[in-house]
Length: 137
Ligand code: THU
View (cartoon, rainbow, N blue to C red):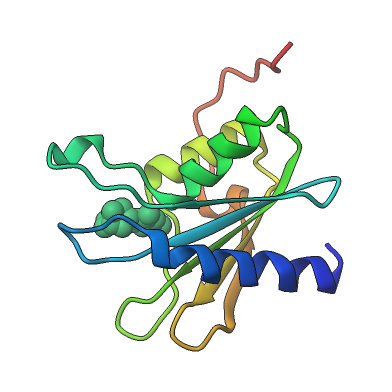
């Protein structure tokens, strides 16, 4: 991905993080996904009093892209800070991202410093994943 586009996506994930709805955990996460054509869609974690109904920022961003008719997602940025470090997507998000594109780039941003701490792929984070391997018609 172009450096400028990475910068824009990182900024978008950091910016949107303030809207996270996390009254129970207090843990704010911002995410941004990038499509092949360079479009950026954002998401935040949305917690619920019925805890299992909580949705992570990564899935909100991904579903936002899909809702806009874009399923050619090539990268996801996650902005958060836990003990002064970036965080990696949870298992449910890894599976959800992998279903769309296992080769998706994953960019982990430290929300305290604004710096990229790690770059990897969904496939690396979720080896031997479960898959029906059925493309969306
Ligand atoms: N969370 C995310 O949004 N993304 C992650 O990568 C890790 C966890 C959210 C879910 C919940 O609202 C809070 O962080 C604590 O788990």
